[in-house]
Length: 281
Image (cartoon, rainbow, N blue to C red; front, top):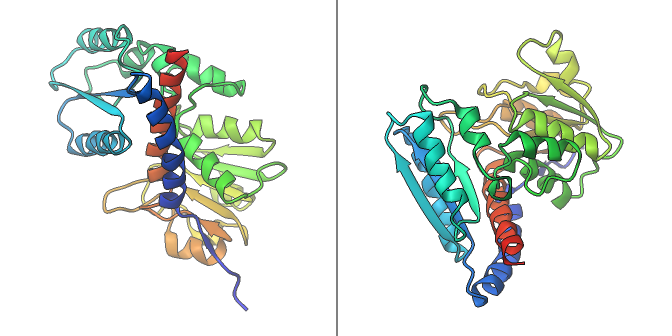
């Protein structure tokens, strides 16, 4: 008899988060405070423009304000930082999101660091990263927070499990590794230079794919019954895992699209509402 597979439905998780947020937004609005997320788009990357539009639409559906700042692709680091500082000083703005990647002439890290920690709702500053490492970040990076939210929603145990994270980016692989570690998982972090990657992935009770390569993780690598969270999103609506082969081995898996992505946006909204609540105190 084949084992029942659990498809981890991110749209369902995201909707529950947004339903809970709707009441909080109403309560703030009654006090004359409308939670506001400012998104900055530098350049004309079409995928980035789509992401920014999606985030703006999600805000409006909840009754939040979305402020969109568009800068030309010739923008300098100094000009971008000046725009960020203006938003830092605006009390009507509660969260700031710099859409990445930015044009190549911009020092992206310097721009991220310019965001006020109280408005760093996407968890991109080094201070936010450090707070996350210690387990008390107000706003951890949104995709790692989404992965933890999905595990919690479906009551998938983290404590005592071996989690394997494939990817080490500062806003995905590294922070999710720390969040899993803080939840008492044993964590192995793999990357493009890991030797014996297939064997390492095969140790994982929980496997997080965050490598940025389409259909990279193969089902043959997985331990039977592993829980697979695919945080990748590549051209053609393809994740970082080979879905069909991984579905055959996994006990639970996130689809792409409709898995981690919707929850990532929901976490961004949640962090912005929380920032507005803190500002109101």
